[in-house]
Length: 278
Image (spheres, one colour):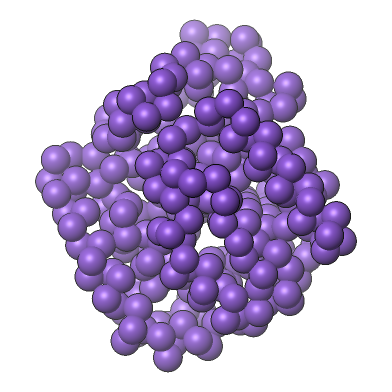
């Protein structure tokens, strides 16, 4: 999944590190039940559209969007259509259902990224929802010269596999042992490009602590943006969409942190002060 440079160094293992142990408690059954509110989030797009349409316009660069576990490109159609309306060139991962990094999956993602970079002559932004965000982050670590920025939605990269309510589904669909597989990569390490993690404390699938990008000495262009959203609905949540559009619209090489104080016009689509590290 990752390049040799992103493989975990033995000296950084829990027994040899001063860092706190990764979060390993999944969201509660109550939060999981609240995932049904995803239908409300999708319904909120229509009344929020007049505001969403005012988001900063894009510069026409390409955006690759990865779906979550057991999902396909159909789930990212609304987000991609929104980005297209803002003058981006979005496309899905075009590999059917995301059942984990099976044979050939990551190779095809690399090839797709390379083809788009060569065809457009411009770096590509990567967006990943849940497990799709892991792909986006690792591709950016491998191919930073072709990636403009990375944005993840409810992606578990900072906790153990037990910090989600979906790890058993992952093992069932992928046929892989998630604990043994994750030990081969340094998932918490930030990609060497502008990186944004969008997360929700009320996520019922992924513990929010597992989506917090710790400050990176190697890359100061990282941030966490908290939204009020479910996990299943994060890809159709109006506040998440605005944050994505705001991040994509930054001129290349002129990254600035997300400015929550400027978002008062969103009338209740709240951006709480995010956690900066755990």
